[in-house]
Length: 248
Length: 248
DNA sequence: CGGACAGTTGATCCCGTTCAAGAAACGTGG
DNA sequence: CCACGTTTCTTGAACGGGATCAACTGTCCG
Image 1 (cartoon, rainbow over the protein chains, first blue to last red):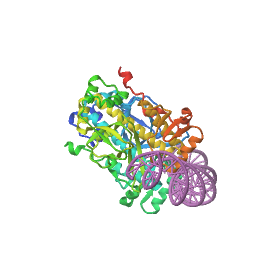
Image 2 (image 1 turned 180 degrees about the vertical axis):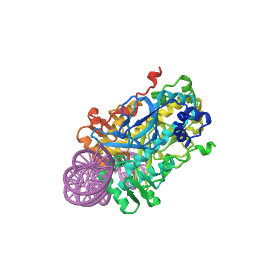
Image 3 (image 1 turned 45 degrees about the vertical axis):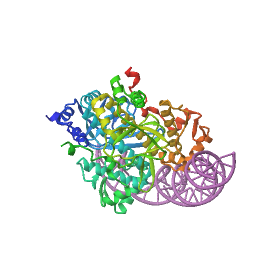
Image 4 (image 1 turned 120 degrees about the vertical axis):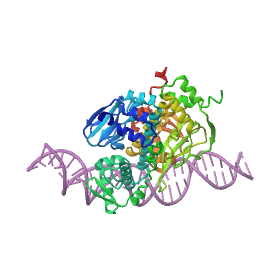
């Protein structure tokens, strides 16, 4: 029982945006898996690796990342507990980016072949995983817009708004108060800025009264105003897909 | 016969990276569709639209795009004939970006419900479409790296390398000689630069002997060298997935 | 107590932007 | 086939947002 409940977050996540019947849910919970602890900074996956398993983040935070020959690093996404990390490993042969632990993490890993078999046997689950991938892509595109076309203040503000909203949606925090599990250097790598400039930008947001910081905990004083300067509209997160509500 | 051949490019595209049996191929070809011509600059899809159909680009070029409140535009991807444009419309409820014709286009549209039914009935096709989505995501992430962490020269060079390689892979041009269907302003919007700076950067690439331009036709004189300064590695395009070769 | 790392701040520099204007290319209609 | 308006390309000059370099401060932890 305790064993079969470990993959419950996968069901929760997929069911949050896709309709799943009882049989589908059971099939997911019955997937063979291993749990694993990973230390801060450790790699889950390296670019170029032959993929063998996908993983689910049970606790802690992680991120995806790519490096440029000249040494630069671009953080591509941030993952919170419950996220299906690297679902693509089930389908693509070679990893095209690095996946790394942001903090100490617990995760469950499922073999590539088991996921493929499940997708083959249960079309609704396959569809749900496809939806998850599409939402992931939507977030990547919003990040591309963020880095390509917003100024430093907008980029940082947008990242904060998104992180808060996702934490809220996962039931892990309020949208206007949370701890950001990233150093300023990591924030810089996520926004295409430098650590120094991130520091100044955060200071400016603080001084203009939009946020209050203590350590890495952020309180957003005026969420409306911050979303405004961030040009944040949550549509791209697709939080309101035809999941549980409609399935009921 | 002539009618059923119109969707052949879909089969070609999906089979290029995924194994499809004869029945799968036939099921795709038998999808109900409409063909449509679209003028330059016209919108296929607008952000916020309720999705109704996906489309396949039969001829011409298109791009996906998002706008920022302050007026900026970020081009998210460029599509060439044979690309499955907006496959996500089959699955997500609301469009999260705009899709626009770059040149006059011909396309085939397939109803959302028909694609879902096909995915449900033929798991291998569902998997193939999922793979297509994943590759799309991989390209987005590379673009994010491009815009976030490369300088102007690297960005333009990378875009040229990618476009050439994709054209070659689709059998539409050589990797070192092709016409770019984008104005300099559009190149700017794809790379997070300004049109003026794109102009100067192209001039520099030309003057340093890496490329030769005539109109919008680019000849890459030293592909090796250009890929070097672009930090281009084609792995992220996943051109060598387990497609036709392995299926045979 | 000391060593490492994250955060902070100042001074200076530079890549890419902005503004402006002229030159080419392109379609369109007479 | 040419005249003409429009869009795209091109180039110069000046500016500025963010980068870079460097030093200092806090803070966590062994």
